[in-house]
Each structure stands twice: as C-alpha cells, then as structure tokens.
Length: 162
Image 1 (cartoon, helix red, strand yellow):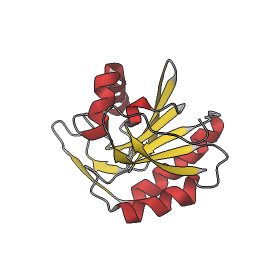
Image 2 (cartoon, rainbow, N blue to C red; image 1 turned 180 degrees about the vertical axis):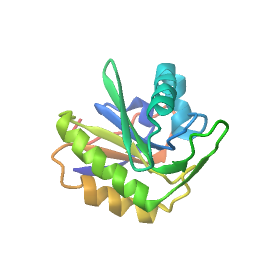
Image 3 (cartoon, helix red, strand yellow; image 1 turned 135 degrees about the vertical axis):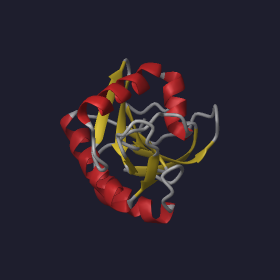
Image 4 (cartoon, rainbow, N blue to C red; image 1 turned 30 degrees about the vertical axis):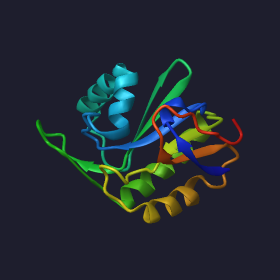
C-alpha cells in the first residue's frame, strides 16, 4: 500500500522512517541533518556503530526512540578512513538496502513506514530509477507506506491508512 504524499516527513504519523545514508555519513545534509537536529543521539549512535562495525553499502542500521524507529539505508558509497567523504548512491546499493528493509519491517513487526525520495538528493540518483525499486521491494507489503515525493516544511501530510 504505497502512497505518494506532500509534506514534512518529520511530522509523519508512521511508526518508522527509512532514509538513505553513506556508511561514513556525518548527517550534515538534507533529511539526515533534519533527523540529527530532531534526535541528536541518532547521529552519535550511528557514528559509534559505523566506527565499530564498518558497515558496507547496501546494509541497514536501525535506531529506535520513543514512538519512532529510523532505518538508515546505506545507499551511498563511503570509505571509513578519517576525513573520507560520502560518495554517490548506486541502484545496486538501493536494491540491497531495500531488500534488507523489507526483511526488517517484517521481523520488527513495523505497522507503517515513511520514506523520502530515497538516494536522489546527495545520493544523486534519478527518481525514475529508484521508485520502481521501492515498488518492487515494498509494494506488496500489507502496511501503509508513505513516500514523501514533495517536501513542504512544517506541513503534515495526509497519509492513507494512518
């Protein structure tokens, strides 16, 4: 049950938010920055996880706080060397990360999901390449999935099924 919506993903009523990052992400651009501003511990915990586990592109990391879970999908390339910059996203990384997300949504019994135009900002991919991957991996799930295709700061989207 995928629905495209307009609004501010930070105001979602969904139980979980998924977004794309690099394995060495500093959460200093786009949605990652907004998430860091709202939940500073998210970025600190991610950095700790990244330094300890050295995740690879295509993997996923989940963070939870009262009322919401955040799935960080490693859609972008990124080296763990000190000072390394995040690279661009690839469709292969998005494909692997969405496959992992589908598994985690089921195992964690997530009842609803909000997701942005994944990997199209800093990641650099074309939305016309990414949307079919989302539909392939998540389209038949029995939960409401809101894709935030148009951002409007401070506006709560009308999310079907929530």
